[in-house]
Image (tube, rainbow, N blue to C red; front, side, top):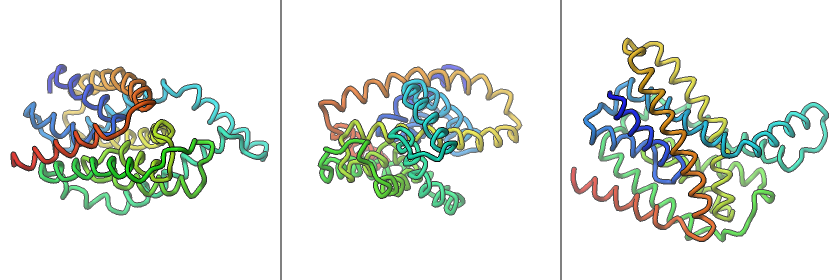
Length: 268
């Protein structure tokens, strides 16, 4: 892998991690078009580790919110007082992670069977249908301050869709939030906050696998370049999407994913 290829993959990761169009699906497509392997361990490790660039982007964008959430959570634990709004949001984010973590651990050994281009196309269509369903079913009127334990668990179960290759984590959690009638930007903010605890955990697993690869040293610079590109583009993508959602729907993303999946199936 050249540094230019690494930077291009980082740009793809940064754009598609937060836009609800599937980072995993687009990385598979980008690797295929660049003639790079998409299914070996090195490819998996590289793709997971450049996600840390997008983790840096979301932490940078929501830094003040995360600082308030973290400090209030610690304060409520230390003093045993009633959780503030920020602390309560933090606990709900952690609660929402449980369903996908448990199910992911149970089915992790069976996910390789879905790595073909045909499955990538099918799950891109599923991704588009989730976004359409979110717009059809959601009343888009609730705020994060109204979120309940039941809502958080519902969004967490919706995130299970993202265990499928080419189904966006953002799209699945947006679907969960909007079906619970969160306003679009509120659903997006919760989806982004959910990524903060999960990305480092996935990165730790990938780091352990990197150490076992014979070509590990040759991957370090491409990973750094890809992560930097993902961080810069990811920050811009978050900022753009939250502004876009003030006046627009998810239908363009839904149409794009569905159309792309159909085109890939027709070209098989």
